[in-house]
Amino acid sequence: MEEDIMKFKATQKLDCLQVDSINKTFKVKGQSSDAFQKKKSGLVKTAMAISTCGMSTVLDKALKFTKEKIYSFSDLHSFELLEDNSTITSGGTGLALAATALTGSYAAGAMGGIIGKKKTKKIIESMIIKLNVNDFDCPCIMIPLITKSTKVGSNEYKEAYNQAQKIISMLDLITHNN
Image: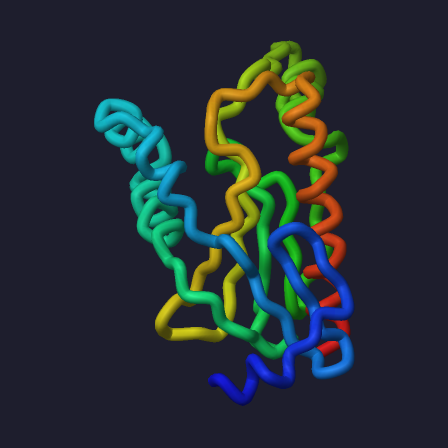
């Protein structure tokens, strides 16, 4: 493991994702979010667990992972952009990059308009990138981008969404270059 760290030299850096395109490896920094865990009250956790059929509980456990590890490009199987536990964008090995027709929360409003009901979300609670990797110790890496109530039209949301798109583009390149 230490030998891998010595060989790793980031050729591309996005805040939390570092890529060594020469050695075809990557690592994710800061995938732990204790602040995210502490900000949720018991009532919020219970409500989220019920509304997401337990997915938010799995997400909470995955976010506690703190070990930084170097992965080979071939270790990345798939990835998703989750907004309030709903998939916005996904991709991975053997999959075409799938994205909603419109960006983010506005897609729900557009679909509602098509069927006669208009629903738009004005505030989100979380935006997370989920990576599924070939690692029995931690098969799922979560990268939290938004961890608190955020207005969809705010600068904070726009910055997080733009960062997510850059990370997803880099992950797509990784899956196609292994």
